[in-house]
Length: 399
Ligand code: AMP
Image 1: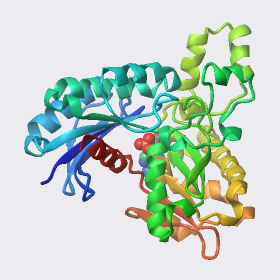
Image 2: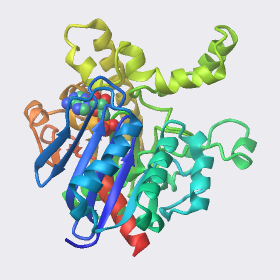
Image 3: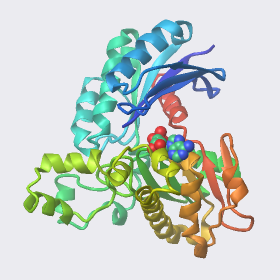
């Protein structure tokens, strides 16, 4: 076993962790604490195709999960493997204008990530929680923690796409602009498509639909992201697990002025009580509405709204790269697993020559799968993999 990198991805409803050989891209251990704070919480991890799990625990809290991962999974059950770890890579969702690329973490970096909390109010605090906890619990590795940012991938957005049509002083003085998110997986997908299609990255034209608890669409022209659905924060764009996605900003004024709801509460409603949860009134877990699609009007509407919004984004991005489009990609927990979402979304786009092949769409796959009908625009399902990108960047920076 060579020098290994531990990767920590503290998401909004899950914590993903892995131990990776960054040079040979071998994953020795990977796992996930999922559906945290929900009835179906689970911590499971894999070593050489063998699965281990923490059973009989519902409503696992974020803190409990982090402690269990550090103290039990790494320090107790897999210490031999863990002792080979030379660095820790952390996913950080929004680095704003302060971070354009991955960086070794020190006190100043932590302070600056804190400054970006307003740009990702659900995520950056959890990313910081993971950073602090791992630096504390693993003091020998304290100086070898690296932050990898989801926003770096969107650094090259053109001005026409990242500016908002509000007075320019808000950009010039206060950096209010579109930052995007999900960039780490976008970079992985871009490189993967380049390998699959045997085409240079700088010639790739794709639309990436990253659909999970957080969801976004990005359009890549000649290897560079030219637009993306998330904005100043990860609240805009698609309908998400608990986030509203795009709404008319006037709704906020109406809620505040006419319904007398405080700004703090509105922020909470839009970030934590909206999206799939707000629509089905039950859970942010997409599977719930998907499973009830055929017999519940509420859940059917929820799924239909999710797909319709997604189709609108795909069609508008399609026109930015139309002639040269290489593929549309579905990735993330929903993108990879929901045949229903892929079918309904693509059916909205038939007039643009997007067609799903039913058998291919239903196929269980590993790594990647083409699901389009022959002689139509390629549609690919690709497993998300932020971890490998984070491991490689971390290794490069600490070496
Ligand atoms: P992620 O944030 O990428 O981990 O994705 C989490 C989301 O994926 C949750 O909303 C899950 O309900 C959803 N998901 C996971 N498995 C499936 C599945 N088989 N069908 C539909 N949605 C799924």
